[in-house]
Image: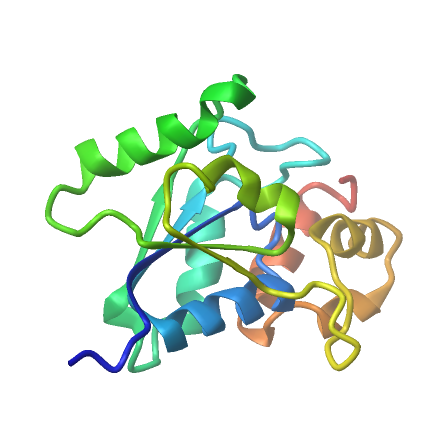
Length: 180
């Protein structure tokens, strides 16, 4: 019998940048799922105020947090293009996973930070797991908030991002001369 509640957990995030709220969600997945897939969305976008980082950089941020953990081998990070068709999003994602990763079982749990983020998958994945974004014992954080702090030179952004990724973010914004 497996020590995990689910065989395969899936989450989709942009991770612009990967912050402690994302990490909280992934940590819960790693506790509950034998396999974990993080799909980074909007991989066709980069260098904009909403999507400053490219797919490779976002993937590296996640790897930096988990690479030295015993859970790293159970973690898969993939990229997804947006299709700009909300009605078909859930089907598109599930077809993509089925066709691209036939070696792993389809997800039996979807993890999200809100009911809205999860609603695309209610007809496709049996278990929907919400990770409370408004937990009074955990700081509220959004990637938009972190990007705004960086934009305005507010060093408190470092309270919301793993120290393992400070250099990536600082290097990116130094190249952009603080414009986000």
